[in-house]
Every structure is written in C-alpha cells, then in structure tokens.
Image 1 (cartoon, helix red, strand yellow):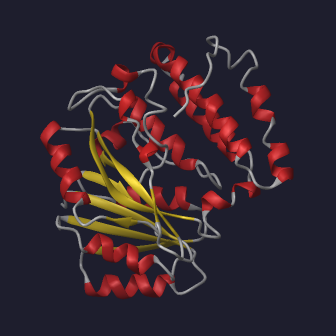
Image 2 (tube, rainbow, N blue to C red):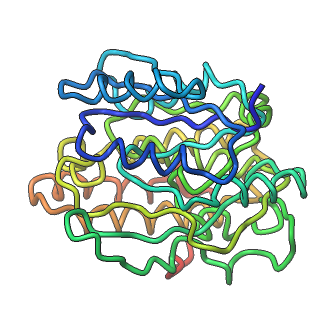
Length: 303
C-alpha cells in the first residue's frame, strides 16, 4: 500500500497534462500511486495517459463518460489505497518537494489535513503571480496542530475551497463519507470545507509548493456563466450537511454565514456574462431568508 494516492482528473488536457504528470513523477518522495481519471476526453489525453502508465507502474488510468471533475475525483477516491490522498488539477504543477514536505508534516503531527500555500502563473506567458491570500495565516492558530473548533470563526476564510493544496488522511475522508457532489462547478468547495470543518487535526506548511495555472480558456473556473447558480447549490449542500449536527453547526455558523455571503458577492462581482450575473443575484436575497438567519450576519471578513 503506498503512502499517498494522487488523484488527477483529466478532460481534454493534451497540451499540458504531460507537464503536470512530470511534476508528479519527479517528486523527491516516491512512495505514491497516481490515479489518472480520464473524464471522457475527445482529444489525445487518454493516449498520453496510457503511454505514461505503460512506462511507470505507479500510474493507473481509469476512464469514464464525461461527468465533470467531481465525479472523476470520486472515482479516484474509490480506487485509492494510500494512507493519504492528494488531488491535483491536470493543468497545475507540483514543486519537486511538495509530497515530501506535506507527508512529513502529516505523519509528524498525525494530521487529518495538511494545507500548503500556492503561487499562480499565467497560461501562455508563464509569468508568476503572487498569491499570498491562498493561506491566511493571521486567521490560523499559532500552533503546530489545531482543530476546526479552535478557529471556528475563520475555518471558511483562512483557507481556499480547492483541494489541490491539501493532503487528506484517507481514513478520515472515509470515516465521514466525504465525496464531491456532481455539479458543473463549485463542487470542490463542498468537499474541502466539509473536510476542514470536520477535522480535529490540521497542520500547515507555509511555503508555495504548487503553481496554479490561471487565464486558461476553457477551464472550469472561467466557465461559471454556463451554470451561474452551481456555487449556491454547493453552499446549500454544505450547509445542510453541517446542520446534521445542530450543536456543531451552531458553534461555527457565524463564520459559515459570513463566508457564504462574501463568497456569493464575489461570484456575482466576478461573473463576466451579464445575463448569468443577473441570474446569480437571487442567492443574495435567499441567504437573508428566515431559513438562513440562524444568527444575525455581521459584515463579511475581508481577506
């Protein structure tokens, strides 16, 4: 059984997926399995994956009809055998020491989740962009290991709701039955924030160990206009899941509602399609309906 399972969903990524996999196979830590899930690609992605798998026994290729990254990650999670699980998008890049540093931290503190910092680079030009906000250390307890309840007002704002800067203990994920909802976008915030909220043992590695590609046409993050309310559906799914334990939800609801409101505003402000932007205004009113107002919402936090 490998120490880490890395899950890589791939959809039409022939122009960049080889570079991504090279950054994984070139790690200083080698005790891992790489599970590539081809999500119904129509380009040459699957051939690239199969070629790499044939030359490296650590690489497994699974296929499915196109269902989106959430379903692809779920398929990878079901097949994973490692003690810890990492998930990477097919156009991002690991630094060569990422697995070594995250696994070392995780085993040292017996962590449920370890979070690191990332940087960004522009697609095409490769120009680096500072991303200090990917780990808001001023909201994180100044200790080596901490729980969500030790930062109950900030668990949703100190970290970003994407999975690829985090290492998850697989038994922790399975114990809580955490999987991705099948949504066209924003499926990752449900998985990530549910895991963070449930975690008793969280640690960080405060270094930029991942390079996140930005500005690529066709990426999920650039096509939110096709499903402008998916983010709101994901928020509602997360809220309903957290409310299964009313005492726990009550303890974190202040931070959750502030984050939900801020995240909704961000989605509306950054929606480039004006028609989609108009359609996404509805959650602003729905968040303030009686079913949402379990507590008076204070002004949202500013990163």
